[in-house]
Image (cartoon, rainbow, N blue to C red; front, side, top):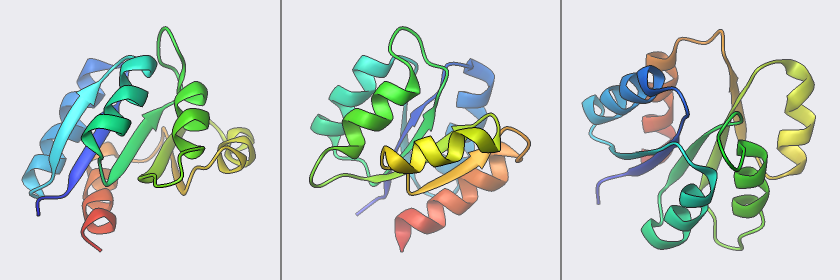
Length: 118
């Protein structure tokens, strides 16, 4: 089975970079930029991992994190946090891991692929 990643990212340049890196690691990625569509995709597509950007329009990443984190059988949730002050809130809502904006996106996408395959 090919690992599946749902990338929820409002910045097209970051979304393309992450998607390309995941494809290079043989991970099938779907990219969405809308929080509502992301929650629906988690329920219908059943990804192994979800990479959530917290600054989504119109429903932000906090909404996505709370909605997906509450699911009984949910994917691995990785959140992009802007600073350390967001980590506690993200974990309380169900985040399994987090990355900050200073981390190189391609390297993190590779780590995601490893986490998915494990």
